[in-house]
Picture 1 (cartoon, protein in one colour):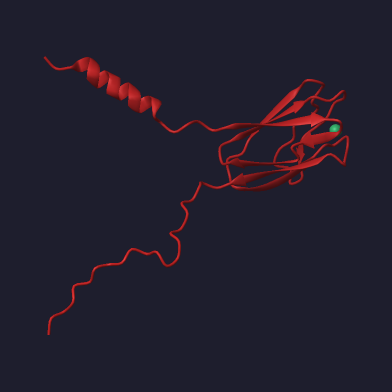
Picture 2 (cartoon, rainbow, N blue to C red):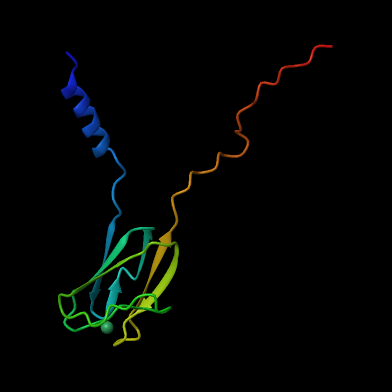
Length: 127
Ligand SMILES: [Cu+2]
């Protein structure tokens, strides 16, 4: 008799081991500031702005790529970033309120340190 349950267990384990989903990064709006003013995310991550202030704010990209509209007290605005780059943004009501989102590309493996390349064993030609 085949251990079917064992196989199912293994498959379930594979599903759970899939890469973690994109992150969510919070930026608070409080005392006329974005905190933190600069966030670094990976492609696919979502930034969530939360209005913790005592007045309304907006989150508007300088390049026009997104615009939250009015965010009331306690309101939330979510924006997903799917391409690498840097986006500066501001609040329409309070021009001094500024922030930026830096979207990194896919993580790259560190290049091997110099001088430590593996030595290839080249067969010496016999003469
Ligand atoms: Cu504002």
